[in-house]
Image (cartoon, rainbow, N blue to C red):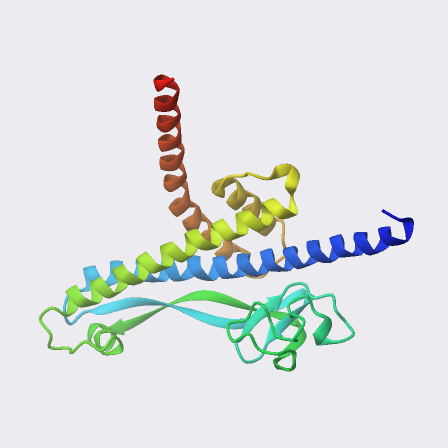
Length: 248
């Protein structure tokens, strides 16, 4: 490699790491939201099962709100989502690492263009809010007739399906985050899901985020979901290895 080419190569490596870090930050935001959804569905299901017909239900919902932050973030006005945190591109939105070569966001739900984004000392966060609703209102929200004799069964099934989907999303996001983390940290590659979640937990605890207590609670719930699966996989792997060695 020529000496003249070295700065270009180093710049490409830095850009790639910058892009990966932005991607990891975004996946972690999505993981927090997925974990919140899982907790909300589980809490709603427990309340429904105990309320009885005609009773009141403690319904858990996710609310998006802008919170203050110590660093500039790139926020999508249309999707109400933070796409880059922190965002260090001061010249133009177009140069933010969130956008592809066409100027469309890689991360927000609508893949919106740079004109729909704004740099702010604020970031979008999700939080769990519990409110009390009547059993009838909950049924109507899910298109179930209040006089349906199978109302509780149908409502319970709805939340069971939602929990199953949320769990699948949590696992998928954790795996994606681990893959990105491995590429960012080749010397530590091959870490387990639980190890990664512990690293993320330390990162949150060391932060000055306003909502870090809720994030840690959500992460704890995600870890509880992941840990048994990892133990099961490790056991199956050890058994398979034992059988393979025994045959030889």
